[in-house]
Every structure is written in C-alpha cells, then in structure tokens.
Image (cartoon, rainbow, N blue to C red; front, top):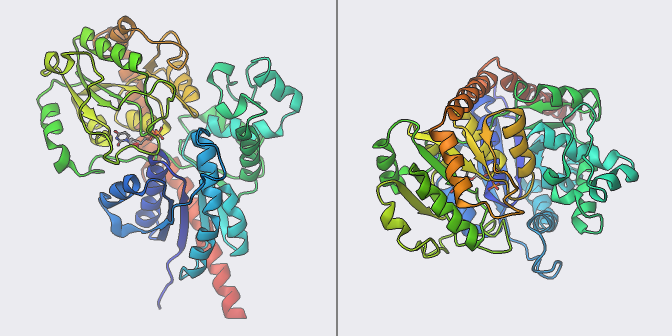
Amino acid sequence: MQTTKTHVALLASPGMGHLIPVLELGKRFATQNDFQVTIFVVATDTSTVQSQLRNLPNPHLFNIVSLPPVDISALLDADASIVIKIIFMMRESLPALRSSISTLKPRPTALFADLFGTEAFQIADEFEMLKYVYIASNAWFLAATIYFPTIDKRLQEEHYGRKQPLMIPGCRSVRFQDTLDAFTDPKDQLFDEYLRIGLEMVTADGILVNTWEDLEPTTLASLRDGISKLLPIYPIGPMVRTMGSSHMSENSSLLEWLDMQPTESVIYVSFGSGGTLSANQMIEVAWGLELSQQRFIWVVRPPMDNDVSGSFFKVGDGSSDGTPDYLPDGFLTRNAKMGLVVPDWAPQAEILGHASVGGFLSHCGWNSTLESIVNGVPLIVWPLYAEQKMNATMLAEELGVAVRPNEMPTENLVKREEIEMMVRRILVDKEGQALRSRVKELKHSAKKASTKGGSSYNALSQVAKQCEMSLQGLMAKVMGA
Ligand code: UDP
C-alpha cells in the first residue's frame, strides 16, 4: 500500500538568526519523522541567504521556496528599526506565500511560523492547516511576549513609564534595563505590533520553543499553569547547528590554527549575524584582547557609531573588503601568533565545537547561546538588541555560566581593562573552571533532552503525531466525499 508522507510548511522571517533554527527544525522533521518539508524563506538581501542556503550540508532534506523580495521603502522611513522592517516584509510577503501554498502538492497539513510570521495564520486557516508558532528563543522570552498584551494598561505603564520590573506570574521578572525594545515606548509602532503578535500567538494550535524542560523548568511550569493554560507549549530544543554545518574547505586554515592551540585556551568573539560596535568600542575590545595575553578568534565588521544591529541585513554578502583598518595600528602584526581576526562571518558551529575554544564573548543571540551551551563553552555576555539582554541575565544570573561587564555595553563604553579582566576570568581564573563545569552539566542535559526518549524528542514527536492525525483526518474526509 502506498502511504502519503505528511507534508509540513515552515516560514522563516528575514535574518540568518531566524533562518538557521527554522532549517534545523525542518531537518529534524525530515530525519526524525520522515516528513516532506517545505521551507518558505522571506529573503531580504538574497545573496546573504542564498550563499548560506547553497552551503547547506543536506539540501535534499527539504524544498526551499524563496519568496520574491518585497519593497517596503514606500511604507517605512529608512531609519525604521530592524524589527519593524522585518514585520513589514513579512506582511508584504503574505500574498506570495498564499499563492505558493496553493500550488503545493500534497497540501501541507501544518504551518510553522516564527515570531514574526503569525499574520500567516489567516492563510493556514484558509487552507485548513494546523498552525504553530515556533519561538526560536527561550521560554522566559515567550512568557514576556504573551503575557504583556494581557496585563492592565496601568501595569504596562509601570514598566515603560516608571521603569518598574515587568512581573510575570510564576516567572523571573524582567528588569527594565533588560526589557525588550518593544516594551519601552507606547508611542512607537513597534509597541502595538508586538502586542498584536502576542495576541496572535495564543490563537495557535501550539507553540514550539527552542529550549528544554530541564533548562527552564519553573518558567515552563508557570506558562502551562497560567497564561497559556489551554495552549500546548512544546519545548523542543536545543535546535542548533552542529559541526559540519558550513563548507570547511573555505576555513581550513582557521581550523588548522585552532588545532595547534592548547585545549580550552581560545576566546571566540562574535556578535552574531547583525551586531556592530562603535569605533571606540572596537578599539577597546582590540586592546582588551591584547592585554589579556590570551588566544582569540574575533569576527570583525566595520564599526557603526549609532547602530548596534548595523549588519543585520548585510552580513556575509561579501560587501566587506576584508581589510580591518579600523583596528588599532599594529594590532594584527603584534597579535599574529596569539589570534585570528576573521572579517564578517566565521564558521561558528565548528569553532565552538573545537576543543581549543574555552570561552565565547557573545552578543547572546539565542542561537549563539545554545551553540555555546551544547559545546560546553562558558560566556562573556555582551547583549546588543532584541531579547539579548534577557538572555544575558539568564546566562549570568540564573544559569551561572557567564560573566558580565559591570555596565550594559549599549549604555557605556566597556573599557579595555575590564575586557582584559573578563577574558582572564573565563580562561585563566578558578572562576572560569566553575563556570565551565556548570555549562558542561547543561551540555549533558541538552543532549539527554534531544536523544530518543528525551523530553524534547518526545515533545517534537507529539507535534508530529498531531500533523499525522490531521493528514489522516483530511484523507478520510476526501475518501468520504
Ligand atoms: N553565525 C555564524 N557565523 C558568524 C556569525 C553568526 O555562523 O560569523 C551564526 C551563529 O552560529 C548563529 C547565527 O548565525 O547560528 C546567529 O544567530 P543568533 O541568534 O546568535 O544571533 P542573531 O544573528 O540572530 O542576532
């Protein structure tokens, strides 16, 4: 008897940090559940995305549909925030998504949309598909996002107006200095858009979140008992890229260099796919690394003085000419033996998986955070935008796997002496050993959750079962008609 494969559709919003976890989820559906998978990519700068998609180690696992780029220039000011731009791009892509889904055979039984894709639920409804949100971040961020729109206006005002912590029932509250940009200004368009997203999320058939039970037990329990009582939450993480994710031939000299360094002796410095530092901050980081006398790999981008996410739509597109002339004079020569400077983009999954890497100075994007944890690498947190300040607090204060600067890097220049000290705390001091042993415990708990029979494996199986049952229901309907 011929059986029809269950077909699911995934929708990724623009940005490498959004695309990567969606690809991982697609991979998992294809390999763990033997599903047919279509991934819709809302491309911005197609060269960035296309070069990453070209380099996928296993492209045969899914069908990638790049939706045509949309022009939002007439709808927004050029200086609109990245998040608003993403929201508008997603909105303008809906007609193309609808027409593309209508041509897919067999019709997918479920749509998995990321945080910025919830407006596509109307399309899922039209085609009688199940609809899920896939939060490529943690449960604490999820709790804040779905809780905020439900609270009294007066309590919202306490947070943005009086800078009081956002109290989320049963969860750690969010300090104002760590809060999401969306929660800081009710007059900003982002505020209303975010409220809408939070409200749309709870209309889903379920929410998948890139965490695991043992990482955030209290938050997950509170979510289930409270705000989302009737809405299933599926912690399916960590969904991360592992070694072999990129074309290492292009980076073999980097790996050869790593091979020659002592175990856990190198600090890896990177601010994700979009992060940028000011010119002065770049100089301080350079001097901090040099003064620490520790080995390093640093992914550098041209500095931007008033934009912490300046390379979000540009990274990896080859626009950087590869000459980091913004570094202090003589930096590269003086440090030729101790460190490597990589312009623009590095094979992060391979670097973090290398035994010589002993620390990660990170902007705390959730993908980077998870990649550090699954490789047992402690962090120096350097949050810049989005939910990174929450992630940084969770890493340093709750999970105990990171050190943090005394002041927020987005508020004040972090001086070279402090950077030097943080690097030494992680790589040289006893404190680093304690952080490392704690992060290794998390690494094991992550592995346990993802292995067959583990909590995340089972959660994803439950979601897959629902998709299969929905397919069977649809087929029974067709046969009965
Ligand atoms: N990344 C990479 N090389 C780089 C910078 C980033 O491979 O030079 C990958 C990184 O491994 C992660 C993703 O890009 O998977 C960045 O996602 P994250 O959530 O950490 O941050 P975002 O870029 O979304 O701010």
